[in-house]
Length: 241
Length: 241
DNA sequence: CGCGGTGTTGAGACCTGTCAAGACGTGTGG
DNA sequence: CCACACGTCTTGACAGGTCTCAACACCGCG
Image 1: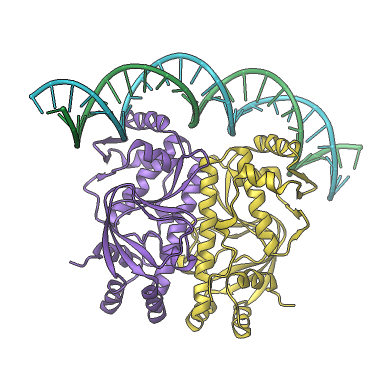
Image 2: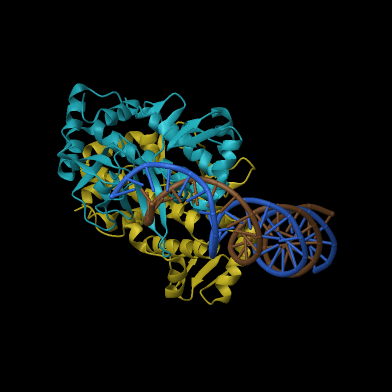
């Protein structure tokens, strides 16, 4: 099985890929690396020579606050290109860090450049992928601006369920969620204490369980309802013919 | 002077454009329209046939909440492609509305398609532009998650100052800011009442004036300081050779 | 066995929201 | 030209959600 099978799964949802195209994507990868928890993979401002494809594990785009806190701006799971936008931007406005031990693959920008010049459909596909990332970012903006603590967490759990399903990382109604409550609080812009209380409320409402870093959704309808979750923004459909 | 001069100014900051390329961009436009305040230009979910280039006025990407409020997710000023991401996404996950009387130009997706196939550098440029939009969105996520009411507003004013300067819509330390306090509150995820009080505090600190829909920054250093504003995320530099 | 990170609980403070009323200003119709 | 209506801005009192600070429990690991 291909090293980047998970990434291909994700890509195939948005575009039918020919064998040639899949091979071209495969050829993007120059090397793979293992990174440790809390490793900073890309620092903001640093000039980039390659983009990071996440093979396994969890990465986060983060920004530090003046008070030394950290905000997680977007999460990445297996199959995601974590900083494909760095190909056009040349440097990132945020850091890219590992939340768990992770396996990553490097795609040199030269190779990406060649790929998009030779494969217009793939150019379109990767442009689309960064636009989907942006749609997720919009949804997070909306969450922070308008959703309550409970709804924010519920929404995050719904989003991850959908995204992990594509990555084949969901079993039944459960998935591994290796983030601490502190890290969850960095995702939703709350304090760890309040996340703790909010989780208890979600649990006692019978919507979820979360123990030993594993999340189970007991009531999908209920969870989606309080999150006001509508998966449309994830664009899980064929968009490129 | 070209109809799309403001857009070209914005583009030229990120890439040196040949006469041929500028002509190609010019050719994107099929027609122009005038829209009225509060007009919905694009509705979420609607299949798109063209993208909107804003020639003059103010547009906003918006999402309605269940309680009938509205969140502004991103603002667009003259020279912006307001929904270029719609070219790859096929439909939007948000609405696009006019906040003021605005003049817009339509760029049929067929034309965009032809442009990016024939001009790899421009393909790169427009991919970059949507990635810069995403960077702005990230900054807004960060604002909503971590900045106080005062800092959020201050940050917005700093951002608009930079973006309007490119659009040649800044005079000295002032620019027209035609949004009501209610609309400002929709940008920053606060209530109109609290925005009112926060504005008073910014005024009495001697940082800004805002009257008759015109904003003047009295103390750039001070405003940036409480906003913790760093313009890096706007990528105001040559990124494509 | 002890330690550090993580999770939990309580009490009180603070920021922002809610509700309500009035002031201001501008455009419109009589 | 005035009267009125409507949107916007302003102010006050109070409520509520989230934060802060602090302490303690739990647990895996060295």
